[in-house]
Image (tube, rainbow, N blue to C red):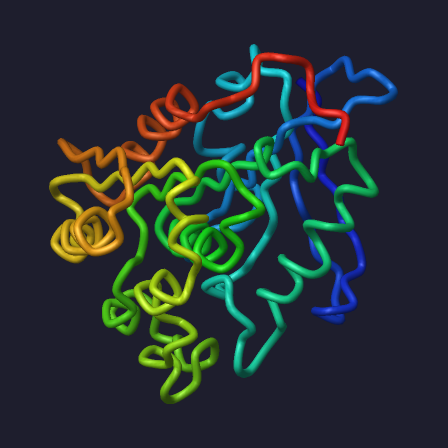
Length: 252
């Protein structure tokens, strides 16, 4: 596999920002690759999955791309006192990378995966644009923003004084506003360790997904904490679970 460390100037952020990419060594001229959009958590950046897991080796037998953007401490939102990271991700980075790199835009070839804050981001993106993706895997996701002040002293820089309770930031609100038929077409994976401090809200959120929304969710619980030991184990399971295409890319 090839590993790319790309820095570009973002108009949305008015700044230089990086994104990491894993690509096959051999790509045909007309190919469009399936894509895993792999999101990092709070306190990490776009390099973390590459540095702390075996992601490059794990996807070595798959003919696909893995894109790992740097989303800072944004919680995948437009920061109140900072950059418009949500707009950057959805309106700039994702579409422009499809010009830079041979990435498929076909919904059946796009997958969302994230841990902790990145799990929140993956769920938020899936609820907002379910028609653009095939599957979403949230590992130890932040599903209840009331926990944020305990893990993020600077949270008001991102959310402002009332942003933690604002409807546009609530996953349950976004899910209820989404087209249920489109949500049901997605494949869902949700994992949380038994010793994770967010186990109870994740159990409750999974109940919401399955009972209230009627989604078919692969819910994985068991030994594990909120750490990279658990996430390194989980990314391997997620890659086995994802409905990855076996053919060489998509021509869309």
